Image 1 (tube, rainbow, N blue to C red):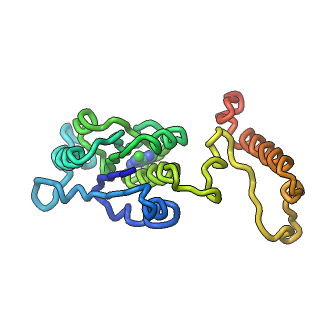
Image 2: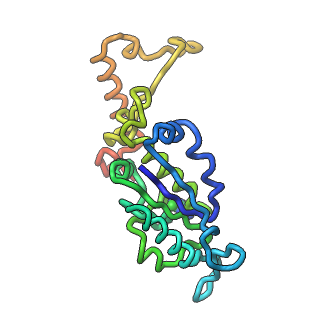
Image 3: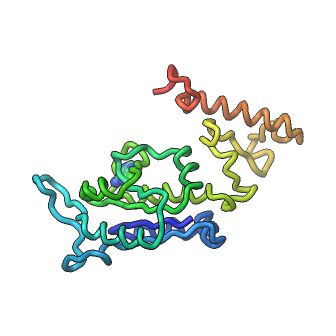
Length: 230
Ligand code: 6GU
């Protein structure tokens, strides 16, 4: 999968994909992430990409022309499954959206900054608008990094048995169970006996019960138990 990210602060995206699983995905040629500096494509003087908003009000808006020039150029080179705009008023990103996008082909992601981007770009080009939660970030870059990480690790072949996504929280609407490693006795706190039993069935049952208990305590909304949610 190829992901093209458009930003006015591309330096914010230097490190998120350069390490760990995102690096491995790219080393294995399963993922390509290309970050584009919008200023490179502006037809205006001195790399200007934003301007005051019509109607007045605080905050600059990213102009449509530089975005259209870059989006047209990218679309001439390949077809995108989705053109995503990162914005706090988008649909809240979740594991189910990540699963779908990880199987769906190349993606373009547009990061806003300042007050956002001209509405006409959203109307003409954008096919999906995503937020990563109900709080406001300075720009879409950190949110885009979150979305690319969540999608990238799900691309078939990226994870191995050690890092498998099957046991992740949310993959089955249950939170993941607790995990333990050496030593078996840490300062008087032992590892639960079930995990030391060597009995696969006992271990799986214990993990499932812990997952259910944890989900009921912490995220009853995930279990469709609206009574306890919110
Ligand atoms: Cl996608 N962008 C910004 N600026 N803030 C956010 C967000 C996105 N998602 C949550 N907060």
